[in-house]
Image (cartoon, rainbow, N blue to C red; front, side):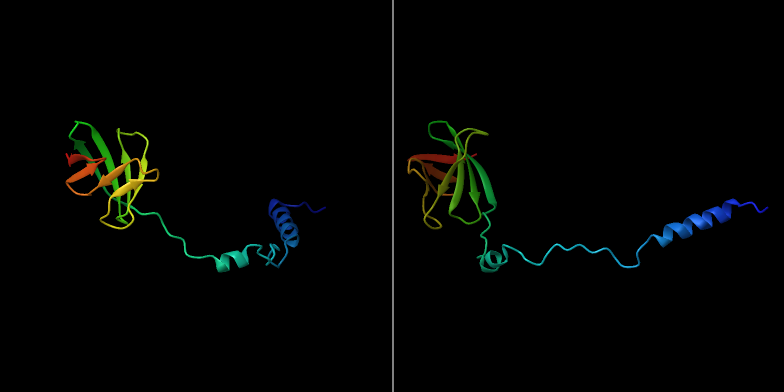
Length: 125
């Protein structure tokens, strides 16, 4: 009587395992119908928000501090009246015009070493 050896058993197992494999790659049908294709084709360009150009701390005449972030588009600034406080967004109609809040209550003129904040002179420092 013949006995099976380990190599012959391994060979049979490998042949059995390979016989179960398909020779074609597996395919997935994800469909070619994109429901947003027309919207994406007709979408306009996206305008990115402006980047931070300068962040400056100013000391005003009444000894208060304001923190202003000037943006690269030259018409947007973010104002905080305390460090880490809430941001008031300011916009100017065009470059070198005063920055004004949406409600009109806050006005900032200038963008260099000195600015005027709600009628009060402030100096960078």
